[in-house]
Amino acid sequence: MPAHSVSSPQPHPEATGTDIALQAGLVLGEHESVDVPVRLGYRSDDPLAVALEFLGPASDAGVWQFSRDLLWEGLHRPTGLGDVRVWPPCTCHGRASLRIMLRGCDSVVLVDLPARQVRRWLRRESFALVPRGTEATRIDWTAELDGLTT
Image (cartoon, rainbow, N blue to C red; front, side):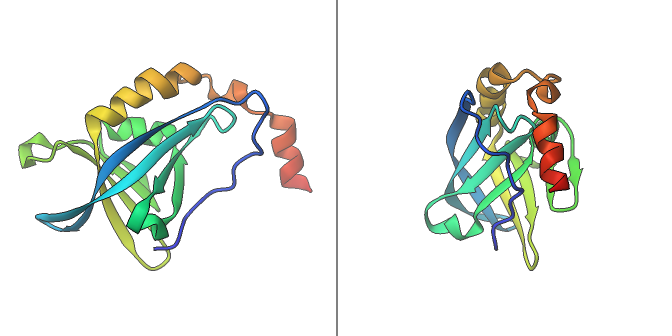
């Protein structure tokens, strides 16, 4: 699957970031998956987005950027439209993982992430850098508008 990424603002000299390496399950069928290493990343100079980077043999899947709120909401209820959708753990069906669907131009991939680790990383690290609800105060709106008009 080709990488799907959204252009990010240029790094700000005072930007900080956090990431977490995880073992994800790439879903191949109803009862079959293969483990792949991934990294979730967050930067204070791009406060609305998280990046999901595929590593190792799955690196061809590239880096996907999507809403940090989408990831958080997906821990609690099904959410998302279009290219990225997220489902919470479903204990009634024996799935303790967070499931993310990534839709590219010509393929769809389902990825299972360890929900407890994702939740802990968001709470302790990502929200510590930029608390929920304060993201807009971190954006240089003049620079963003200049980028759109030039």
